[in-house]
Length: 213
Image (cartoon, rainbow, N blue to C red; front, side, top):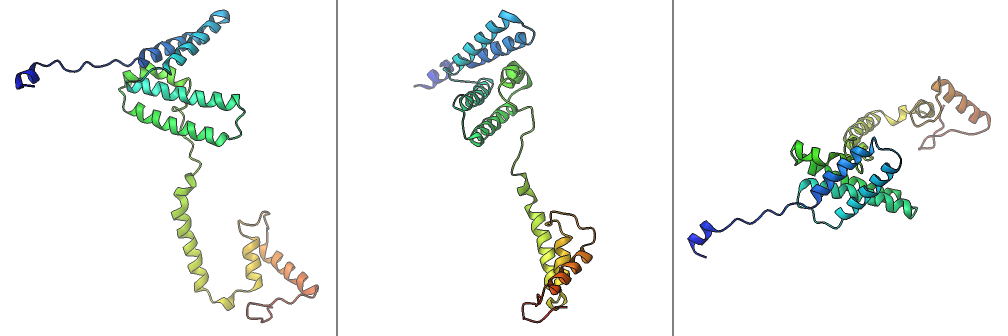
């Protein structure tokens, strides 16, 4: 190809997205469906379903078209889970999270008017308008929990072992968060427990075998 050919060659034609007009049409139908009643409502539902099925046979070539297909994939996964009475709800939730994450990225790359054209059709099947729940959010608290644990360990190591008595251990247990029931006076409760053990003939000793008061 000569330089002149390159200069006068026709630029490649942009292929329009076949999914985008379907998504826009579905959005219009769903808007009408909000106020439709009776037989008309049923016909709109059938037409909407037919258009959404048609969209699954097309290759998206736009952000809006891809977003609409991802939203349809979420709805398809939910329908499949209901039809087969899926025993794996966690897997369905995982599919929804992955697709909604992709939808969110697509939306952030779109102009407001582009998103507005498909918003109603997308919102019918996805929940990107709602904040995503993070079941593992507690992972972010691990550094603070670890620091707190190091402080407690450091305090216990700094305290001479011979200062700890069974009374101290029981008070710590009964007054701590690990104990299911609230004890108003952990020290008195600890004393009662130790007295009952001694009355029953038990001898309380430490790790070295020495009897404890």
